[in-house]
Length: 253
Length: 324
Ligand SMILES: [Fe+2]
Ligand SMILES: [Fe+2]
Image (tube, rainbow over all chains, first blue to last red; front, side, top):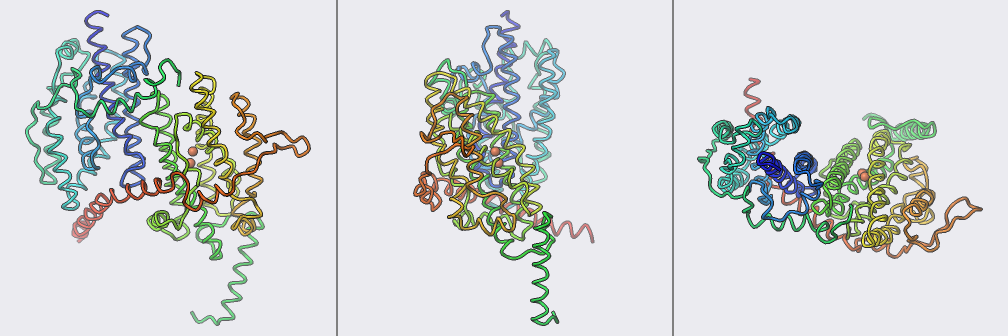
């Protein structure tokens, strides 16, 4: 791979990792949600992100050209090789945390994928065009949840505020550009994340205002995902996710 | 209200006669139709049990979602478990047409007044179990549900027609998973054999006791809630499944499974009815775990449902103001 291909490969892996890790977390709600309807809805969002991960991994494998498969990439890289942004890997905590993270990410992806769908890379543009429809729908579901929880009971509001506090440290990384991502953005392949930050902030602030909640300033605080420096949670997730592939290498499933 | 006692008895007899005529004519009973109280109760029992089975079944299969060994299989499993939850929702709604609420049904489940398929009280211990559940458990469910497509209660019949299509899909996917493992490495083949051995008997038990020992069978057959007997359905399942085991190249889970030329059916060994009783009565390997899981999710979600109620209550006066 030349430098541009290496950058492209890293970019695709990063987006795939973001998706698979969030999908894993969302799937943990299955049979544990407050309503049967939410078991189904959260599984659905998990499936959408799983689909995204597969498209990015498959394309990454193709760019790499070593004959690896989507499963090789998902199941045979360790925690230092995973490059997802940290917000995706945080445990599901309670329903307020899960929905607030989802709301933040839905707003982010609606804006990010909008730009990514204009990528010079046809394949990336096509994936983004499919994914943005899903994210728009996800946002239509996460928004009413934030409103209901923020304006429900004292307890539900309090849980939203606790979640907001915890997530605050991890939002900044969404808008942080690595060197290789910058170079791809200059070539019209990836998106300048920093350019979305103000829009994201304005949207979330405006939305929170309906419920008299304030958004703290968005700054780069905890970060390192793109360099493979994670929270302690990712290792446990991967040991669960990769268990069969690791225990029985070389088997087809 | 001015009817005399005699009149209402005549009335009741006439209604019952009309009802039974409808059943005899293979007409569907609809929610707004008059029906005997025992018919209603019998249906609520059977349909809510069916709904609970779909929902509790999400647990043993959900047990492997985060450990699925390939992304493709993960997507298939997640979608399947989601389908089962959807079946649960659909069946709860269909049961509500009989004048009971979903929360009443859930309470009956959690207080052990209502049952669910006892197959889900067995654990899923290896990845091959996910194949076995799809192939055998959905397979057994289909045999039962195809028969129930002709059940006399309209909403139940329509639910079965709709659900059956998805169950067939699940069964094919489960069998395909088993096939891959049975034809895979020695370790995978062993997992497949072990899964078949463990799920075979509980799958046969899904059809319930022998006809001679079945508490609800006679009345259910008479009202055409059930259309075929437990033993007939079980035989159908055995007959369709044995050749599938042969294709997998696995050993028969019951040494007495043999083709009987005279009967035109497979003979099989006797089910361990003591185990059946134990599991039905709450002493299976996972009975406690399944209910505890369901209750915990329900209790953990209480603050969410409370918030939703509080939010709606706050919206209501505003809506009223807008009207004024
Ligand atoms: Fe089902
Ligand atoms: Fe099914």
